Amino acid sequence: MFKRVIVSLAAFWICSSCAKKPPADAFCTYEPLPQTTDAAAGQGAIQILAPTEEYFYVFDEAGKQISYGSMNRALAVKPGQYQVKVNKSPHSVTVQAKTLTKCSAGTLLVSGSTDEYYYVFDGSKTQLAYHKLGSPLAFFPGDYSVSVNKTPATASLKPAATTTLKTGVLNVQGSTDEYYYVFDGAGTQLAYNKLSRPLSFFGGPLTVKVNATSGPVNITAAAVTEARTGALVVQGSTDEYYYVFDSLGNQLAYAKLGQPLSFLPGSYSVKVNKSPIAVTVEAGRSNEYPTASLTVKASGDEYYYVLDTNGTQLGYNKVNQPLSFAAGKYSVKLGKDTRPVTLTAGQPMIMNW
Image (cartoon, rainbow, N blue to C red; front, side, top):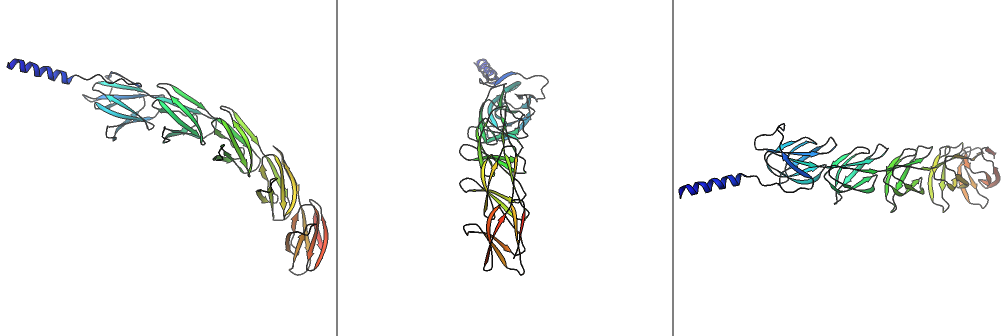
C-alpha cells in the first residue's frame, strides 16, 4: 500500500512538471531556445522580427513594464503571460522555459518627397507613433489610421510584410515672400507653407488659399500638383497703402505702395485713398499698376481734401504733403476754395494754391 502511494505521488510530480503546449498565435511561433541566447536557467525568450531598428517593450499582466529589447534580437524573460508593445501597438504572448517565442510584426512605409512626417493612430484615434516620410515603422499586424498634414489614409498591416502608402505633393508657386494655406472639403485648415515650398498630402481634392483668394486642386499619389499664383504691385511715391478687393467688395489683402502681393489668377479691384483701379492677376506673371501723386503747395498748416467727381471725399492731408491716387479727374478743396485737377499715372502733380 505504501509503495502505491509513493508511485502515485511520483507520477503526479512528473505530470505537474510537464510544460503545457503554448496557445496558437496568429503572429507568433515557438521553437527551442537557441544555445546562444543569453538566458538564465528556466527562462524563455521573446523575439520580434521586423526590418526596422526599433525597440519592443514587455509588460506583465498588471501592466507594469518589466523589460525592453531591440527588434530581431531575443530578449530573455521568465516564463509567463506578457503583453508586448511595438510602437504602442500591443500583442499578448506566452513564454515558456527553454522556448523562444518568435513573433512577426508588420511594417508601414509612407513614401513622400518632402521633409515632413506621417502620424499613425489606432482604432480609437490614439496616436501611436510618427516618423519622417520615407522611413518605416513597425507595428503588430492590424488596421491603422495614417495622417499626413491631416489628410487621412488606412493601412492594413500583415505579419512579415511591408505596407506602403504613397503621398502626393502640392506646390503653390509664387514670387512673393508670402504663404499659401490648404483646406479640406469641410473648410478645415490642414497645413500652410511659404509660396514655392511643397507640402505632402494623401490623394484627393483640396482647396488652396492665397491672400483670401481660393481655388481647387486635386492631389494624386506619387505625383506633383502645381498651382500658380500671379503677383500684383501698385507703385507709388508716397508712404501709403493699397487695398485689394474681390468682385463682391470683400477686402483680400493690403500692402504698402511698391510692395507686391500674390493672388490666384483673376480680376480684382485696388483702392488707393479710396480711388479705384481695376487690376488683373495672371499666373506666373507680375503686373504693375502706377499711381499718381498730388501735392498742394500753400503756406500754413491747413489740410486739403480730395474729392471724386461725385463730391465724395477720398483723402486728405496737410498742405505740402503728398497723397497717391489712381489716374483720373478729381477736385481739391482748401478752405472755401475748390479747384479741379487731373492726375496722370506715374506722374506727380503739384498744385500751387
